[in-house]
Length: 413
Picture 1 (tube, rainbow, N blue to C red):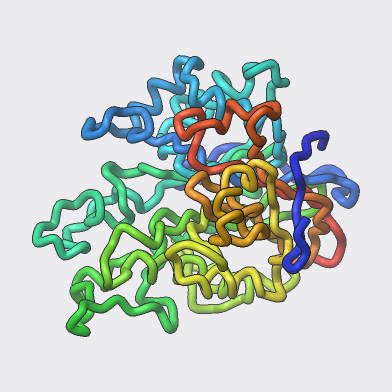
Picture 2 (picture 1 turned 45 degrees about the vertical axis):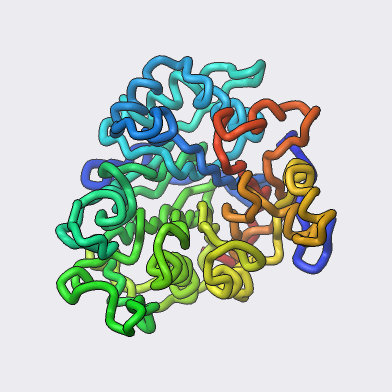
């Protein structure tokens, strides 16, 4: 693939097309995929209205639409350059505002930024893409945060957001997407997860009213299962962006939701039968299915405010290669002071994917059907080529692009 920065370690060793607004081709596979090197990536790109507006200023998707149209927004040009430098074959972008019209959204991003050379890099194209509505900013009629007022926005939306579609998701692929077999779980109800985490007040009462709980979706954005054809083989991209486990109170309502949003994938890859998708089909993945879990999961098994056993249980599953930990030199340099003071371990710091010093973003390949060749995080240290792209939050994002190089192997669907 050409690009490499630092690498990875294994744990213990440091070193619709119409209905769902999906687009792309449902072309059938043409060639054998056994020799294809496949770079899989995720990147929280901070391409939502608040990132471009002054504090207190209100906006919606139109803010991003206007910037995508020009081709000259510096932050988006840097995002595009990072993608051009790393050149993923399949990449999930989180915090890319949902824009219903692809000509104004994803296609404008591809045409005006990715297909234009940025910083002297070669252009890149993604002929296949998928996006769909999310729960962020979708108004509820309830006072979900118990502030005394049901505002229908912010923490009273079904997923935190100031307008519908804020913090959306977008999947870009060089390979055809199996459109008829996409599954989304935007509307799966939290109450229908067996053993769901219960949120209570300090007095022990249930936090959510019975009326709100009867309608409450598990996913703060959505959960997607998007199969992609790579030659004659399929890779199921399992995409999500669980809520940050903060911005709440002692009741830890966001922490509980984050835990269960992550747990959903653990149950799904194990073939649980309780979940139902947005067209009413029940059940998880079939046995011996090739997949990759990707996204900003807002949790670390070692640091941060999340319930650490949620992500730890997922990484420990026999179904995934959870011992693959992408790392970077830039992360080490960014938090060297914590290591020197003995506040963090070097192994944890090397795996950070966010400027606020935590591993939050993941590309987790299945153990079945994907051989890991290499992995890393795009985080150049000061003085290295590309450092200006990550020198500050405003340069690109407070998250870093995470990539894993794989080769498809036999034995899976």
